Length: 264
Image 1 (spheres, rainbow, N blue to C red):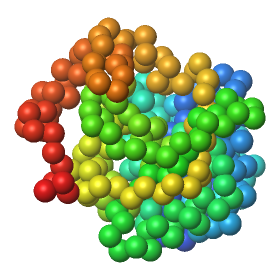
Image 2: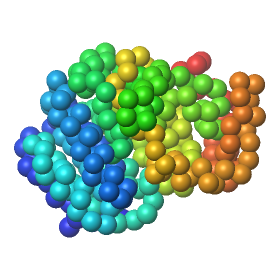
Image 3: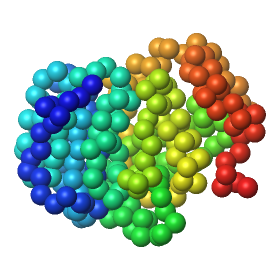
């Protein structure tokens, strides 16, 4: 949980920004501050600078906060004291004031210095309510496996060809919360509800962000909970039976007739 006593802002200026960069962070040992610095360095290089940074930190020390103090951004820094990843994400989202929210996990980076500029251009289209950008799966060194997000069938059951929330942005007025009952399916459940509410997302094919591949990812920890196989003609995948049962119970009508309103 968080409390207002655990919120600090530095230096804070305008009350409205074009972007809020929402960064949920958690304790990654000695790598955490280093990776956070790499993310903020990539943010500092952006050609579009009308943004605030909202960090919700699950760490037990001040290392992430100390890194943030080295940057001249409009910051809101929150202490999240629980152990539920989705609650940490939702805490960051709750305090975002910008017109557009751009999510970034603290171990990922912007690949292009024009990333925010390109995303903002997409939202100049009046029909754009949320969007995915092209991304790269990154080894943290010099290997980038570049991809374009694809909305595939069975996305809600874990066939995620869209990638992590680091690739997504959305209008503040259109945002949803992440379901605190999910780990493996937290992202696709969020995408599902966003599409039900806001229609098909725009796909920006440009490779703008990088997902860092490492063993300390939240998703890496969750994979230990795999206990079943979901079969599909294009390839099977592992999943957790309890989470599958949960989404089936949550969306019974969609599971019977998996069709979105924008497909009518």
